[in-house]
Length: 167
Image (cartoon, rainbow, N blue to C red):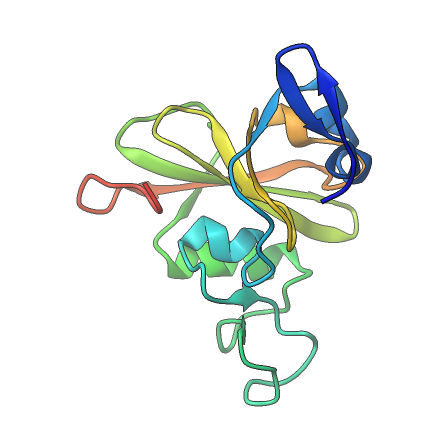
């Protein structure tokens, strides 16, 4: 995915930093190869088999591999994203710090709506699927910028059987 340049001790991805300018000044670590089969919402809920987007098409008309929960507002809306996570047991919180018994997601967006979601790992670091590209670890604020916007909502749920999604 794009040209890479060496910064002391860190492999940078210039294409990723062009898309998410906040990463130019913040540490991040690439944790996967690009994989177009899932996106940030799917990654946050632990579904690596589907790309969560309705494509503006009704259920049954979407190509294989695309999913959006029935009856939930479209993927461009903050209310739709909040509902997706409520369906998965999350509730809203103001606290983005690590709470060992909870897993958290942070929804990024702007005045045009929700744009991205990151998931907090047990270590406290945040992890994201970048569109159809790579998975990265990053700080919560380090991803903020024109895209994907600022953190506009944090949600949490109790860890399931003491475990977090994809850990």
